[in-house]
Structure formats: C-alpha cells, structure tokens
Amino acid sequence: MELDLQPIVLDGVPSERPLVIAGPCSAETEEQVMSTARQLANKGIKIFRAGIWKPRTKPGGFEGIGVDGLAWLKEVKKETGMYVTTEVATAKHVYECLKAGIDLLWIGARTTANPFAVQEIADALKGVDIPVLVKNPVNPDLELWIGALERINNAGLKRIGAIHRGFSSYDKKIYRNLPQWHIPIELRRRIPNLPILCDPSHIGGKRELVAPLCQQAMDLGFDGLIVESHCTPDAAWSDASQQVTPDVLDYILNLLVIRGEHQTTENLNELRRQIDECDNDLMEVLAKRMRICREIGTFKKEHNMTILQTGRYNEILDKRGAQGSLCGMDAEFIKQVFEAIHEESVRQQMEIINK
Image (cartoon, rainbow, N blue to C red; front, side, top):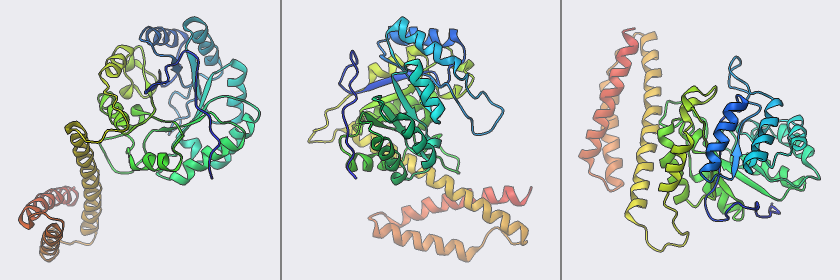
C-alpha cells in the first residue's frame, strides 16, 4: 500500500537535516520542565519533548505525572515559542493532548506492537490535522511498523513520520536496543517520502553512545533526531543514564557532519563506521553464543558430563577453518579465533559447574 503523505513542515523550523526534537524522558516537575525547555530554546531547539504518561516495564517506578504535565507543556510553548510533543498510548491521551494544544504526537514502541491500540488512537485522530510520529515496534517486525503507519494514514492524517528506536533483545549487549539499521533502511526503500527520525537515547541506553549514534543516523540519511535531554540527567526520575544536558546536546549537534545524499565516493570515515558496525554485530553474536554455552554448561552439570568434549571441539575447529577458507580468510587464523572463543566458553561452563 502506498501512503498518502505530506511533508512535516512547521513554521520557524529549518527544513534542512536534521530536524531535532529534544527534552526530558519524563515531565517530572514544573521547574524541571521549564528549566530544561529554557536551556534548549537558548540552544536553538525548536521542538520540545517530554513524556507525560510513562508506563514502565515493571510497576512501581515513576509512571508519569499525567494530565497535570500538559499544563507545563503549554507554558513551555507560551514562554519559549517552541513546539511541544508527547507520547500517546490511548484515545484518552489523544483527547487530552488535543485539548491542551499539543503540536505533535508520537506513538511508542510498545503501543506500535499492538494493532488494537494503534487503531484506537487512529480513530481518535480522525478529522484532525496534526503530525504523528510512529516508533518501531519492540520486536524487529517491519510489517507491524508499516501497518501502524497505514492505520494512522487511513484515519486521514498525512503528516506522518517514523522513529527508529532500536529493537529489544534477550542477550546482553552494547546497546539498550539493537539498531538493526537494515530495518529502517528497508522502510525507507518501501516508503521513500516517509520522514525517518532516529532515537539515539533509546538505542544506546548510555549517554556516551548518543553522539556516535546521531552521526550514524545522519550518515544513513535519516531526516532527524529525537534526543532525551534533561537539565540534571543524573537526578532524572526515569532513564537517567541515557539523557544528556542541553549543553552536551548542543555540543553533539555542532559536531555532526551532515553529508549530501548523492556522494559518488565513500570516504574513510564511512568505511570506519562500517567497521564499527561489524564489530558491534560480532559482539552481539558472541554474547548470544556465550549464553548458549552457559545453557550447555547447565545441561552438562545436570547430567554429570565433563566440560571438554574433544571430538566436538575438533569438529568445530576443522569445520570453521574450512568455512573461513571458502570466505577468503586464512584457515589458521580462523582456528585461532575459535580457539579463543572455545577457551572463554570453557571458562564460563566451569563457573556454572563449580557453583
């Protein structure tokens, strides 16, 4: 299905890349919201974000200030002139935001994963002309993501965009949510005129990863960034570790290299970026392999088996060496790599057996 789209154009907001949306994960207090907004406005940010309703993975944490926070966003808009945006997950959220004059809405990853919830939001938005951004679902399901965009578009909304915030994974990893860049790249191929923003805060989960992820998103031709920025990040009531101060955000944005989309040659930095991405992928695969090895260790313990199974070890070395040769790599090098991997696997299994 082809989406009927119009550009997201806001008066006073520059049209060149990147479109930047910034603000705290959660609206906590009026003072925190206003302080952050003033600092961001002073840095030239035109669109302010803050979560009003924040259902957490587990109950008991801070779950948002609720409707009262919308008055603070109205005050931000009045005092700074910034546009304001927040996340909606129900029809009631939509009605409250429209009543408060919120300028832009986004749908979160957990909501995108539920077609019933997305349809409820779409029904509440019928007859309304407001920009809506849709985050990718929690799991790497492109069809589900596109389906959510279609539901919003079918309700008559044409100023629609996507937010790439990465995908959840069971295994321990560098990122909070795996980027899996090929998925938003495929979304761009399928719907070329759809604006795509990157959420480096939720992908990284750590503030030191925000800058490189912003640059990666720009290098991949993303249209904008939605970044969590807090006046005192370490004191934040939610997602403290992934938020940056307005000063740091300004520094990150000023260092961004925005390349043209029609370069004919790939420079060294782009190649190094690809190497970094490959290394990150290797780390994710190794973490998954070690998890499986630990499960094998548990099985061996329960069945009173020795850790070292020599026949299996020789089989791995021989097979991987041959595979390496077929892929243009030296068989001896591949054997050395898998000897090191096996050594770590044995160490982890010994820890389990000796518990």
